[in-house]
Image (cartoon, rainbow, N blue to C red; front, side):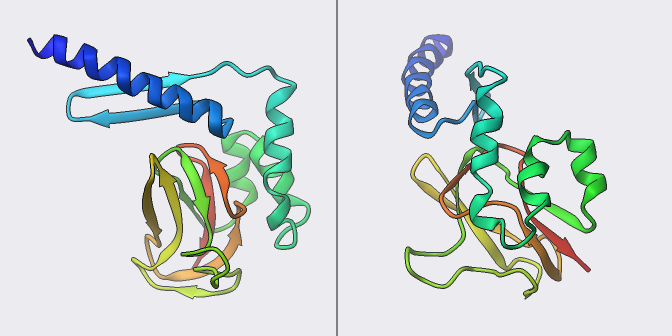
Length: 162
C-alpha cells in the first residue's frame, strides 16, 4: 500500500523536478523525503557545459579575475589544491542569492570577518530560502558564485580562511 502512495508522489514530484531542471538549466536535482529518494538528471553535451559555467562567475570576476572562470571547469581535486582555506559548499541544488532582498546590502564581502553560524548567503530550492551559514569563525577569502546564479549540490560557494 505504501508502494502505491510512493508511486503517486514520485510521478508528481518527478514532473515538478523536471520543470525546475528546464527552468534553471541545472543538470541534476536530488530530493529526499523520509525513505523516498528521487534524483532527476539531464545529459549535457560537452560543448554546452563549459559555456554555462564560464558565463556564471562573471559577476564575481572582480574578486579573483583569473581563478573564478577556471575553477568551476577544473576537477574537484584541482580546485581544492588551488584554494587555500575551507570551501563552504552548497548542501542542495538551487539558486544562490548574495543579499537578503533585491537592492539590499550583501550578507558578506571579500575580506569580511564572519562568526560561526553567520549567514553567508541564501540558496533557494523549491521556493524555500535556505540560509547557508559559516561553519566556523574566519575571513571571507573568496565568493565563488554570483547573485541569482544556479548552484549544484556540493558546489563551492565561499572560501573561508582562518
